[in-house]
Length: 58
Image (cartoon, rainbow, N blue to C red; front, top):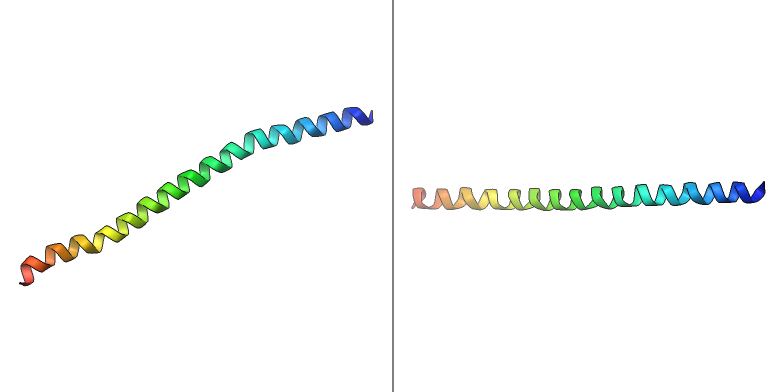
């Protein structure tokens, strides 16, 4: 009886690790790419406005 409980517990832990770990890593990767892209977009926006304004002002 005790061995069955241990076997079921290990099976559940293994299943959770196999299912949750890839999902966690995928979400982390998507967030990392998304935040990086958004930060790059925010960084480029003032540069575009500055390059548009400088020929008009001079």
